[in-house]
Image (cartoon, rainbow over all chains, first blue to last red; front, top):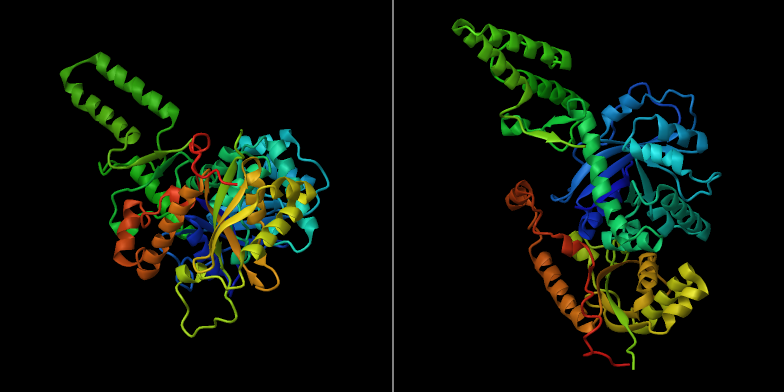
Amino acid sequence: MFYDLNVPWSPNDRELQRTIAFLDELGYDVVALTHTLSGKLPAEISCPIPASLPFHTPNSLCLLRRCTLILADTSQNHRIAQIAAAYDILAIRPTDEKTLKQACETLDCEIISIDLTQRLAAHFKFKMLSQAIARGVRFEICYSPGILAVDSSARRNLIGNVTQLIRATRGRGLVISSEAKIALGCRAPADVINLASVWGLGQERGKEAICKEARSVVVTAQLKRTSYRGVVDVVYGGEKPMATPNKGAQGKAEAQKKRKASAITTNGNDGGEKESPKPPSKSDLQRQEKRARFESQKGTGTDIGKDSKIAEDQENTVSTSNVAVQIEN
Amino acid sequence: MVRVKHRYLLVSLLYPCASSSVAAKEPLPDVIHFHQPSSDQLTVPFLLRVIRDSVAELFGDYGAGVVSTSLQIKYLSPATSTAIIRTPRAHYQLVWAALTFISSLPKPMNQSCVVRVVRVSGTIRKSEEEVIRRAKDIIARAQRPGVNEGVVGDILKAVGRTGGRREEDVMAVMDEEYDENDYSDSES
């Protein structure tokens, strides 16, 4: 599986169909369409990218919707949670060192995408970047602006900044994507990997950047949005096929619905018991255990029924018999 | 006598942008459009010049000098838009990166173009086999445009296989094992 997590989207873009078809031809499997937000945010945030594009897209290609938020000011309230809920992937593009620091340390996003074609004022610091990587945030390298650059300074800056970024991150937590506005800026995965290895990333790391790391971005983003506490996700809850949770391609409403549904399925498993919608906390479980032990110590025949009921109860809450559980680290 | 070692890059030229001359009434399928034949102006000296210029632009005099000793175009077919390029083994990555940075073919052709490296091999024979295999593959796909669409596509998608595309088809295969022992093509 090969990922290209940055294809700029704009309304009435006639070039987009060709770009998507070309990416499919080159062998990519997942493509994220990017909508860029900058300046003052609108009051009502909703994703303008339609769920199904107005033209034919290749069947084998999975399309995601991503938002790139340009961060110009640290003091502004960016309503990150609201934006994140409206899109499949949230990327942040810091413009200076302060915003980069903020993005690395606190902001809850999936990708930090720095504009590498500009000359950056400060060096990257491993301490700062490693904080972001430890949180599971990936750094993005966009190669297409360098390939399509008319003047050589953009290309020089790109190469210089990429080598700096590789040095500072020690090759970890990088994602390579195209950011190709036209189909001409896309390159095949093998070419991209070779380019990365010429830039000093190494063949293996280069492949990871386009496969494994990019996949982990997609999966964590999906888990953050649909799963229960980012750990357990219902892949298939036994519903009718129409309502099967899809690859996060639906909008926010669906995601919320799903979240509720998943919470209910994990809690009360068609046993018909009336439980609180919250799953039992650790102390609850301990209390239940204690009670069970107490009951068993009493050890008379009359109490066995109740005892086993509690055990069954626990089983219902902990194991999920007809729910596929997906656990990601 | 130590043999001079080479790498053979099998490249295919893709044309992602709509050409103004072929403003056909009905648009071609994308597969055929991207793999369209090159014009007759694509000749061996022309392509060699394009590659040399690109290497020189990206890696300067050092790159051009290091590469020039054995850069050669062994095979060029404008009809299928494929070529086999011989490069020195120690520096094939420079040539490859330079090819990646080509986004248009200059003056006589004036066409935007993406160069994709399909295979890297130590002998020319393996490259030739791959050329034939790829050409057959593309013809088959052009004749059956709807393989991945419709009911069959849905089924393949459900099974988790998208039209039988494997990772080897996407990645440029590199064969290393033919380096040392194969003397069959040690000409020049």
